[in-house]
Amino acid sequence: MKRHIKYQVDAQADWGAMVGEQPGCERLFSCIQCGTCSGTCPVSIYMDLSPRRIMALVREGFRDDALASKTIWLCASCYSCSVACPQKISVTDVMYALKREALSKGILPKDLAIPVLAQEFCSMVSKTGRNSEFWLVLRVALRTNPFALFTMLPVAWNLMRTGRLPLGREAIVRKWELPARAAAKGVR
Ligand code: SF4
Ligand code: SF4
Image (cartoon, rainbow, N blue to C red; front, side, top):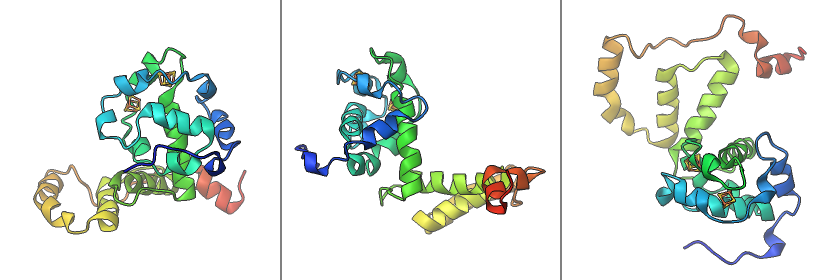
């Protein structure tokens, strides 16, 4: 069961302000905790913390609770909460900011494949500029549930047979200009 009582000693006071500096998160501190975001969210019933509680945790600086939450990964980026929020807060962008930080710090829920998918997708696109679906699915399955590959075989075969799941790795033409590659080579 989730602990509902929070202690100030566990908070990082300036972390919420840092999230508030992320693009789209500027109005974070105007949240009035009305709960409209949670009531509007189509997937909140599957979340461990409602969007309203995520907003409260971020504002107060409870970084680890917010980043380790499954909520940020279950968010479907539908923007319903952002449209409905009476304070015009883009809750969706806050979710994105938390996802980025969770990925960069490696604070990920253990029993959820979605962050692994995000990690592998970002890794692939930053190296090649393209997503190669076959390799993405393979890498995610190997890291999360290798046995699932056997159940995927019939569908994968049909997709490959009809040319809809190519085995080749796709890449943009001048992939050395991608920011991650350019930074590694010291190119500005
Ligand atoms: S709808 Fe807006 S103001 Fe209300 S709890 Fe959610 S973020 Fe806060
Ligand atoms: S953007 Fe995410 S948090 Fe907001 S309503 Fe949609 S699924 Fe829920």
